[in-house]
Image (cartoon, rainbow, N blue to C red; front, top):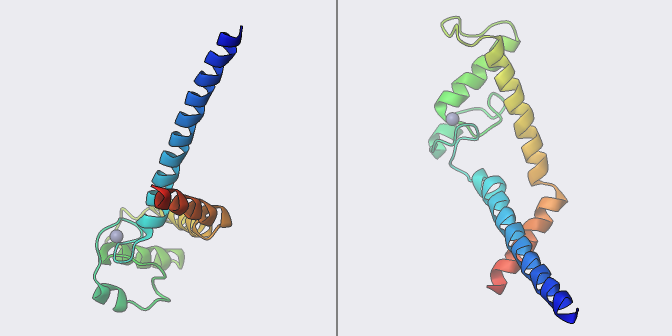
Length: 134
Ligand SMILES: [Zn+2]
């Protein structure tokens, strides 16, 4: 009887260990995806590298994100279409395209709030503590 309890105890310890490793792997993935991906010099929307000059050329009120030239042009057209204008040559900027932009802006807003959340900061601190222990 004692052997059975001991065996289950060992199995439980092994299970806890892999659960812990799984948790650390998930934390590292989240850190890379949410914190490291917000690197400066990359387009917020498509991830293309952008030069400092590209960013400085644009008034922040016109494009409040860090966009490459292509995404900035699309964003400006999006805003103009909301105001009843927009580039008539870009006929593919239809209602679905507008919806994609609206949802991207909602997504981006939620992502920014998530990045500032205390839970994500706790996770980053915990991960930093784990990494410095290695
Ligand atoms: Zn882009």
